[in-house]
Image (spheres, rainbow, N blue to C red):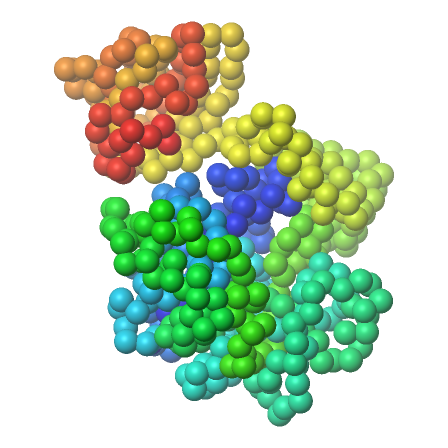
Length: 473
């Protein structure tokens, strides 16, 4: 049995303002199609033999979006493990290995980050098939990306002599300077470190126990006390928080004598910046990548993205312009690695733009904060068919609801009634209330809030089908 392990815990701050802490890049459709990067990761596995449902390791704050995207992709019965805190890839993979062993005696694990672009699926699948015999024999296989040009932003893997398609590993090399990177590419013996792996679950746990016993013990304890929460697996937070934070490379791969590398030449990119995303997507005759409502006049080698309004450029060269509903980024392509510094400044200033978009997704749908001012806020709510908000009240605000389209079932204290298109109602301060969508099409409403405090933490939940009682999320 082959079980994909999809690592979906990253924040992707270098792709701000599209990627944010609570809506990171792996949950976005960045590669030019309709599918998100997480969905692309799952979709490209079709055709592999004895393929089981994936194990996905993700941040607790992303759990409902991950589950919904897998449902949209038609993935049946995935195991979604919630990390209470981030502890890097070695512990995340250990949790996935324990989960996989709960469903099979000793399955093969194909470990894949959820936020990579692979343009050519056939060579990727061929590399996995070529690596299978070594993994079945107990080797820990990593996939080394064939380096087409020198890159200083990637770590490298140097192979030893061999006939292939699987080679012994001579060494792992940290990110080099430009001169060394050119030497690496010229030699033909160095690959970019992709962060993708294939091995047996028990062999990985055994190597982890041998080389990083504190991580192995903490993950075993966290898994032993795991509980089910709806469709999610919650490991013990205390035990996992005590786990050292380390990557699989440092914890295992650089120390084990079982590591081998398989070359991968499939149009891979880790999409670590706006510049690398530009390179990963087909551009026009002027070298521009244009997304959304964009007009570029005499502009070259740019990445121009519009989410909500017209973006127009004149005489721009080698720049990134990213427009969202609440933020605009303008930067030279050769400076986009510094976007992370910008995000840190936004966070230090106490602003919310590093974490949230103006449109916020919830398990029942989403809300878009259209307008706000002193003592008022206007939102557009979208409730999915069959979905329901929690039964709740607010201490500091009242709400007016107007149905734009669809049908709403409203609970207001002891009343339950329907609202149709163009009808409205009022929820007084302190009243218990709920919105449900009993229909088969999305429900759209305009919500006008008024009161002394309009923060999202002014919510007292009494009933919630998504298990969020006591939470404001």
